[in-house]
Image 1 (cartoon, rainbow, N blue to C red):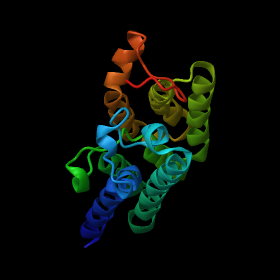
Image 2 (cartoon, one colour; image 1 turned 60 degrees about the vertical axis):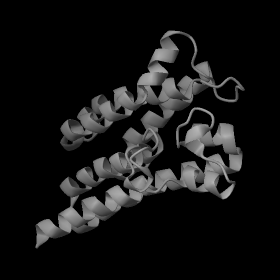
Image 3 (tube, rainbow, N blue to C red; image 1 turned 90 degrees about the vertical axis):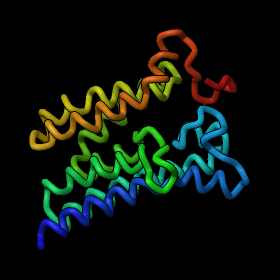
Image 4 (cartoon, rainbow, N blue to C red; image 1 turned 90 degrees about the horizontal axis):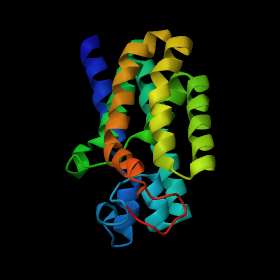
Length: 197
């Protein structure tokens, strides 16, 4: 019976991750977020395409999805299941069943989930993103560097999560592959820039 509960928690976490606020907000305006701006259903593209208010709503809901997924795992299965719920929520965000498995890049939901697991790691990762964006105005670079730093931080601050934490970190970096290519060629868009990738 307990395994059914664990599986249910993971499935619910995936479904939570699959909710896409930017997609819903764009549809309310008669738009397709996947066909505008960078084509990504995340906060940065919501800012470019829909404006600050929509971006703030998107960011808040995506972070909340991660927090709720981990809390659900803790409630129904303990620490170990909460880690699997974290991964499930990120997978749901990136590959949402509700939207033909085409979602965002998982950064905000990953932040929320990590915040629920270990607030120290989450704040350090946020600091990496903030400093990088402040210096370069490249949100993608900040996200990539924070994802790369995450398993190292987990090793020291949340050892039990180190191994499973490598997967979401690699997944987030993989989803930024197009950004990495543009960064290498100096073609990546900067935040608050009208230039689109």
